[in-house]
Length: 226
Image 1 (cartoon, rainbow, N blue to C red):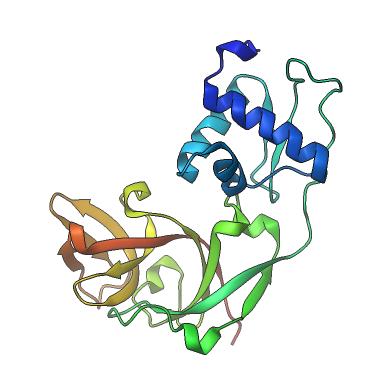
Image 2: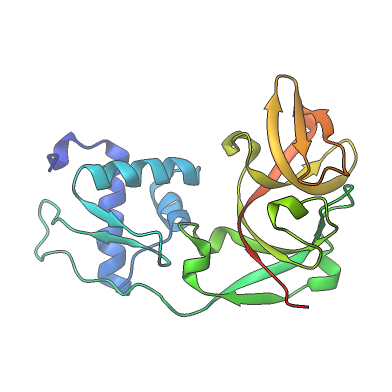
């Protein structure tokens, strides 16, 4: 195990906060809560440091449950060993914020049609995504049919910025110049971005990288039985 004083300041802060949170609530905090409490603005940076703490021997993580983190080593000055935590297996309510077109781009989410709506999902369907960062959209169109996303399906997306997005990821993208949004695979190619459909009947959309804003990455798809 890596000595506590050899961890970075951020990593020590995360551990102290987690110990306090578990002591108070009986379950671990979300990645977003850790970031807010420790002054880390990016969830990807929090995730990076959590993985470092796993490697250092202080944490265990699971991608099969919500809030899937557990302290496994006492911290210096702690009066008690790490407490057992209760992982959540109950259904989670994910906000259904509207629809997204998987064909030609259209104006961004139809909030008026779905205000206050939500769907219940099991924690396992989110993988390692923080439920507080996930939202749902209903798909309209068939441009992603070869990616197993059909008209009427519901996609679950983790909030994600353009800078966090890697080529090949399936994302909801806001196109600033057009005032529209679309669901496509993302490819950053120099000064432009190629938004690639998964249907040979549709052409790629080429836009300026500066006018392309990723809103979220698809983490799961719920097929609607017909």
